[in-house]
View 1 (tube, helix red, strand yellow):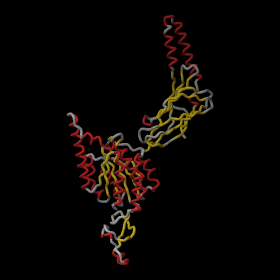
View 2 (view 1 turned 45 degrees about the vertical axis):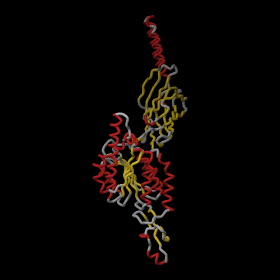
View 3 (view 1 turned 60 degrees about the vertical axis):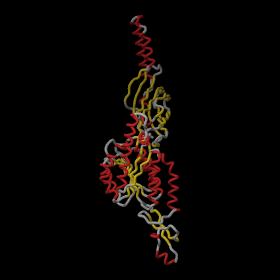
View 4 (view 1 turned 30 degrees about the vertical axis):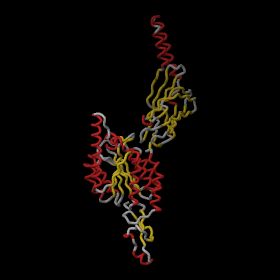
Length: 439
């Protein structure tokens, strides 16, 4: 709970009733100045009386309580308590202002707080952006008994609600965990990979790889016996979020960065359940967020907190710095999932020249969310403008295919899918690597 005695900018507000009386008085001008001056004096006296009898805003104590976190798109409540420590009843208006993206309602309300009592006024928040959404200012207007004038004061009662990523891909989690259980328990591998460990011996059956035969066990038992392997636990996964200018592009109804955050959360949830270590690095030309060495139960809570304030930076990302940072942090072989864009220039002149040092030590997966609008535009015809638009879209798709081919030739796994399937496909690629013993 946060509280503060009223302080800050203050002044006087005249009401519409005062303006109406003044307008009516102006209509008496033809009847002589004496009557006009008398009415003006009476109006001034009424204004001064209202100001004298209105509740003192300095006697108010304002406190906030309520939600401090929410997910994007959800509604939470923050309550503003108004305590009247003065001797006069407070009647007036209260405006509780928040930043526009907080989605605060109502903005203005009437207040009536008797002397010595407290009233609570809830504000509903439905944020439209991630990050910390802060309260701006509270303005209280206390009217006098005649309704001609009011005391007014604006002051701050600090509060902020951290808006977390919505994690809409959570709907895929049961399916991915079922596949993981199948991979971890029911299915064993015939061949050993760099990410597998010995599981058990069993009799040879048709179709088994002859390289998996355990000749010593075969000699002891008198039957052909093969070794089976299972994916190792406690492997390392590094999610790299590119927060540079390309992450600001909108794909459908969300920024590209938000689609990457959602996919990263699904991937991290599955990897943590698989017993693998999950680290996070968000960067452009500087590191914006970093999470390392989490216990399994901490992965999702810590990741969403770290992701919440991330915003695209309108600068070119420094791929060399990001690669150096990954190599400095990760000494053991890891799966590095780099969430970025497949735009030709940033990849060809930024990522490709420094990629060799990363692929030499780690398995690298580049994940990029595709824009189905571009594919739709490439098929447009009908008039000259549509043909030119289709040509430009086809050129963009051709560049994307070329960049994908360049990455694959360097041993990089590429996931390029539209937003609706993006998170699911990235996690599928992780599970496929685990099943193949490559992680």
